[in-house]
Image (tube, rainbow, N blue to C red; front, top):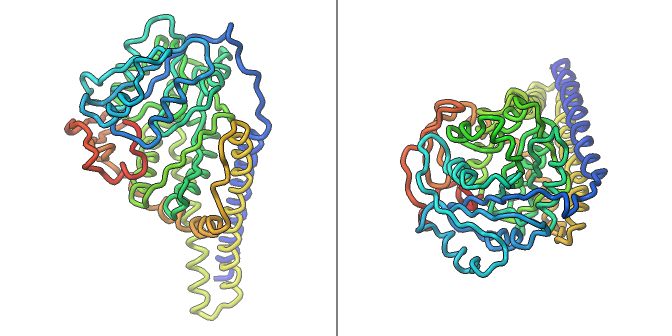
Length: 422
């Protein structure tokens, strides 16, 4: 048993060393990033696309942020799922007709049965663009863009070898509930993998329109569950790359419940399983970072029961060492993100001392919930998203079971976390 305890200890040390290097690389990228923003004269004409199904507490701020972009020439395309959708009321309250910006409001005409509603909406919106548009920027309704959001995306697209540019999400919930802190911890680990594996995020994602002409991505979207995770593989075919823009770490301040978090994480993992070549790496990471800490804990308990104090001590300290090390990786990330966010004039003081203590307690729970979500995602054949059930036969074998307009009085578990987009 002592030998097993030392083996587990060695594996956990190796895991921490590897994860530490990945986190350090990501943090350094955030801290060292500097860029000269593109000038008005060089800024290509853009179209911002926002797809909506259901209302959202941050929708008004999202659209106001888009309207106030410091960018010379761009269009806004709002695609609403249905004429009766709750988002329509919010759009009317904003009185967009009186805005000086070019705003196009669309209703999803014929939801494709072979893809998600969001993919249908994106494909429809792109089909309405004229040839003067040089890139599109996708945004989610829980993303509140700062004034230079679009200009930062355009700057990243100046490189001829870049086909798309992406930011990423970071959570600073107003209410530090335990589920919100679990989501915060999981997301912090997830975005490190997204950075190293070149996984795009649809909440802030710009794509050159030449990509639509040179690849079959529009056809792929017409048979896909999501629009962002597949992008890396599609760009690679065209010998283009996905650029990560560190200054576009976008803050989400929504709360969530545990059930909503579970279904949301499972859906994120499902998209990686279906569309990203690094799925094996993502899944393997989830397995080993759950299995070996658990083995350390089991080894410690068995050793205590059998009277092997030395083995129990080694195994117990291995578990503690791993949990403490994982916990200590997050503060440098939080610091780096806060520097970016505070430079935009946005508040960052969301975590008080009591919240810090709750967060420390949430780390181990995060690993447990993540393991359950990963196990479910590996075999998932049906998934509900925004009240619509989809049958998953394969990456390009998506079937929407039955379309129905969104009604705010009827919410699925997944809507509790992110009621913002299709």
